[in-house]
Image (cartoon, rainbow, N blue to C red; front, side, top):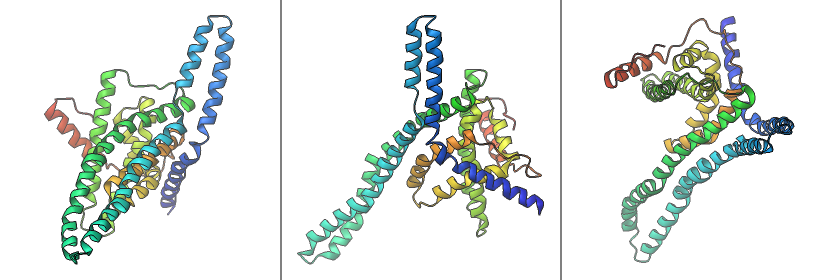
Length: 320
């Protein structure tokens, strides 16, 4: 019973830490600006004994650094205001309006049955056209832009709380780590979908949710750990060894993204909320030392990814 209480406590602690991002993101900018102001004052003092141009150059560099709240609002505007609202507007306003006009035009001739039959063919064509010409390009654009904005948010928060990033030792090592991480995350997402197909009611949903919680925790903490110089095996092992906390941390985002029935809308919800969890992961203090065993859910996909890399490009095995 004591062990269960510790696991529950760690999970609850993770939930609270993940929700702190919604508060911290509104205060970090002010704290970062105060920190930058002190840096400008220190630089100006040193500039009195050196060239003044170096001080102005440093000031311009600090002013050009992205604001966390500004980047978050940009993510929300692109993903929620443009992408998500366009889907709802098309399905909730445009399509019903066209259908009403179409039905009204046939109502005078008493051909409502013909109108319904024609609309059953036109509606899918219009939806497919809208998705091809608007949703798909915007989805690709948002994913591309989000990668840079998420990185800006993570870097700004990390520099404030932990200073200069301690990256991996070489560029090639960084690239290999990022590529392998993307493969692991994609395979783990497929694994989460597969366990959701297990023909056992409730259990399959819980097991799939467990996978998503750990995956979203990895997403949230990976920016911080990468800046700290942690390689992928260390990141995965840390999550597996302290899984109660990370299950709790990823639970709010996993629940919120599972509510929409549309995959596109779910991805939109994720993109809007994810910056808050990046901030939360950067400031969190994970609760460790809970759980008597490691939950090695990443091991199957690590083994599969190693096999794929060895068969395709002949890279050495990445141990976990």
